[in-house]
Length: 172
Image (cartoon, helix red, strand yellow):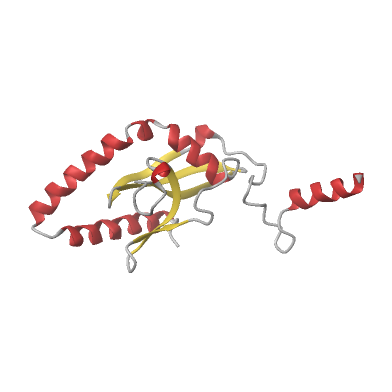
């Protein structure tokens, strides 16, 4: 029995046998230093969501990732996600859909889960709804000034977000 548990522990520590990639659930055991997490660019607004690019230190390396603030309204039974910051690769322009990471909701002990948690406690998150409303009002002013339809402005905003993600190498 002892040997069985020792082998199981090795299996969990090494990760997936084919690649050695640590298991997504629970992460790799490495921690993200919360003091290294900072928003590089954003927030930008698109269809009731805010998008940012974040930089952080993980395992001695500087990494970047894109995140969006969920509106909790696009799919039924996702209301509980309203206001949560979730990792994303950008926006699929053809489908008009946010390209989510897999898994969509990172485990709290994983690398992206740690960043999500810190973003959720940040001053930006505390001001999230006010910031979203402010950007939405500014959006409507911009639309009127340019004399274009909402759909045209949404396309322009999505392209700007994808360009921001591409510039930082966090797009797919």
